[in-house]
Image (cartoon, rainbow, N blue to C red):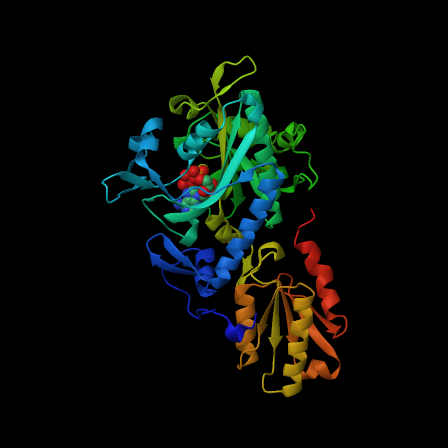
Amino acid sequence: MRLSKYFLPVLKETPKEAEIVSHRLMLRAAMLKQEASGLYAWLPLGYRVLRKVQNIIEQEQDRAGAIELLMPTLQPADLWRESGRYDAYGKEMLRVTDRHERDMLYGPTNEEMITSIFRSNVKSYKDLPLNLYHIQWKFRDEIRPRFGTMRSREFLMKDAYSFDLDKEASVKSYHRMFVSYLRTYYRMGLTAIPMQAETGPIGGDLSHEFIVLADTGESGVFCDKALLDQPIPPKDVDYDGDLTSYVNDWTKLYAATEDMIDMDKFQAEVPEERRVEARGIEVGQVFYFGTKYSEPMGATVADANGKDVPVHMGSYGIGLTRLVPAIIEASHDDDGIIWPVSVAPFELALINLKTGDESCVEQCDALYQQLENAGIEVLYDDRDMGAGGKFATADLIGLPYQMIVGPRGLKNNEVEIKNRKTGDRTNVSLEQAVDFLLERIVPERRQDI
Ligand code: ATP
Ligand code: MG
């Protein structure tokens, strides 16, 4: 993409309304624009990141055996009357009436609707296990939307729903999602720690929140430091096999949010030097809630003896529009964002230092072509302006690598390559520049881990 033809209205000033660094940087880097309280437009640069996050989630969900579908944002109130949640949900639910005076709502979550899809289509235990998910906008009329898309009213969520014959099988489904979550966050460059959590309005008795440590996080958390170095299940993990050992590795060390903390247990189980008391961002939550929805809504299957039994369910959420700021909270410096390659809007900023110089332009155009042909995602700063502004923009929007091309280097047949994260700069010959980048970028895409 040529920057001269792109839409990237970066801001020089720091917007006053933004209280935390990710919100400031998302506004400054022209990723977002606020349209109303808790409602945001995703501008092109931000939307590219959101799509990358979505791709990773889809790949890891599919790998774990979940099947993608798409349910509508608006739902009939009658479905929620069946589960009893229409009245229980309170003011967080946005309620609307259609032209026929039918009560509708903008879905804050989809347990009821997926249960109705299940009950009209699945009748036998032979069709289980089943896990269906979608990635769709949700609306919760939060009392205090804040921190940009970290806590907004409309937000994009991946929600998966598992269906099993009994509790034992349902726990296996829970484990599949648990393992796939560990891999999902890791691929985005994050360490997300599963912590025992309360189930809240979703219900049930088994739940973990996945938490990214960050000073600006809204939850107080307590955990064993050793969790930060715990290995991630590999790409070829056998989702049909027994995943208990992976889950045990991640749950045997103490980790709990402030709602669930047992101080005596925390102090007894974690040696003092490994005790982490910190703030964290909830980037996902998994629940097992048994027959809480299937019973009142009549979602049953025939078991092996032909007897109809209510199906056991779990649900599994990931907040995509919260993940983007969470990644920024975990990875930035004074100059701007530092994207991990796997979610970067572009992988490389190609910076032409001298747009007035014909041979410099020619070389940059040729490099741009070569880089694109090599499959590297390039944002080519071909704008007619000084180098200082170009460097500032590249640092602010946080592309992982910069290739800096100017007449002086070209005289020696060289370009400079800067690593945004480490600040390292290397002079590389024109012939080797593309390979030099591929060697670094390809493994950092984390597609094969
Ligand atoms: P919170 O406690 O932060 O209000 P929650 O526990 O109500 O979240 P869940 O029902 O578990 O949220 O939803 C699944 C995921 O969706 C959360 O883990 C979070 O990442 C995301 N999410 C929830 N509410 C919001 C919101 N208002 N804005 C952005 N993301 C959200
Ligand atoms: Mg939650």
